[in-house]
Image (cartoon, rainbow, N blue to C red; front, side):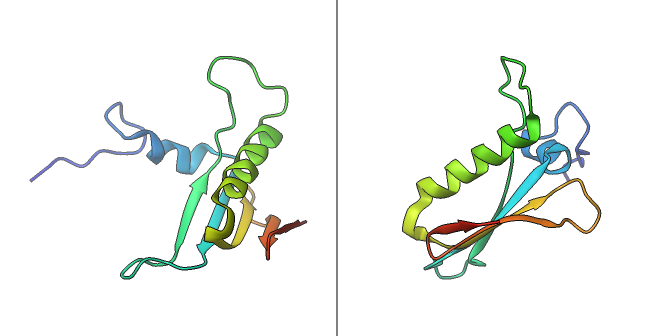
Length: 102
């Protein structure tokens, strides 16, 4: 039996802490999901560059998510970006039929 690793422990994978620390979250629904998959996936923003200080971390992370979703192109049927830190996780932006609304 493997020991469990908490999200804040040194051996935890990076995505575990990213899920809780990122300021924005994107849920992407795929146009043609692979058989046996849920057809959607969650992505979390990188709010720092890692090397340089970022003036507006929320905007930096949001632009990164939008760029990633745009690169996916026609694979994406719908993408919704949420505020990951606010109670109730309100929607910030939505991409449907190839255009951003928000």
